[in-house]
Amino acid sequence: MRRSAAAALAAVLLLPLSACANDAAQSTHGAVAPAGRQVDGPKVKIMVGGLDKVIYLPAMLTQQLGFFAEAGVNVELMSEPAGVNATTALLAGDVQGAVGFYDHTIDLQAKGKNVQSVVQFSQAPGEVEIVSTKQADAVRSGADFKGRKLGVTSLGSSTDFLTKYLAVKNGTAVSEFSPIAVGAGQTFVAALQQGSIDAGMTTDPTVANVLDKGLGKILYDMRTPEGSRQALGGLYPSSSLYMNTDWVEKNKDTTQKLANAFVKTLKWMSTHSPEEIAAKMPADYAQGGAGQYAAAIKATLPMFTTDGVMPADGPKTVLAVLAAFHPDVKGKEGTIDLSRTYTTEFVGKAAG
View 1 (cartoon, rainbow, N blue to C red):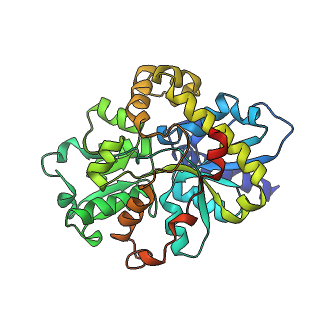
View 2 (view 1 turned 180 degrees about the vertical axis):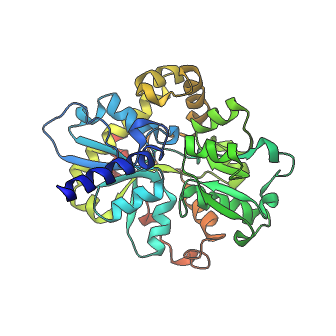
């Protein structure tokens, strides 16, 4: 009984911590999204680096539209506050797929792990570097990152990667500023509000929330292909479904079903308004109100592909960004085989 009581107490104490991981109920640590209509087909677990983030919207939208069921696959969506945590779950074998940034596939290959993007959701990061309103006059570019506390979702995440690149590109060494893990949603907003960070990288709907409250101003906007080219020198394929290469080879039929479902969603998104898309999503994702949520989707929509295909020159841009600062990639660009970091086999068939 003492052990049971202790376990119960521990569970209660942990609840507030997990509840702060993200600002939507479905996005708390390890939370599972509704499985939708069950079908007679394979079961797949997919970990998403924040289910409520607009950059990963196709994951939940596919389930809400019933496209997984139509494709004949039972998908269980799970959520972690950062893409790097989704990668960890994938490598541990806890899930069969991860929805996160494509750049992790290059990072992992440099570390001897074979992971590939199977469906490429986007051609731009969808990320925004926001500077605190109080620091807006002092921080005007990556050159002003020196001595600053910069918020990222977590260390080793794609927001961490992009922040370091923007610093190095503008003459600031990665040792000259402090990356601070602040998560997303309300934890990011609180960090900015309390002065725990001077600036930080985040996505919608957090961006819309920060701007609405007057807490920050946009420094770098990478929600569009144009914004990606300006900040990073080219298209930067980001959010994607990536999976272990060995698993894909052994489960081609299941992988094809997943690709069919996601490509159908991407096409659906390209023919529907932000308001129509927002209406299909869980109600608690629109914490700033329906109007603000639809506006956040509208601002981010340009980043998405319509067919799930990797942009031709995108991988080279991502490799160049990582090679600028990443210790596992810098100086080893010649050893990275980009053709092994993604495949168009399944989206090609889905589009056909």
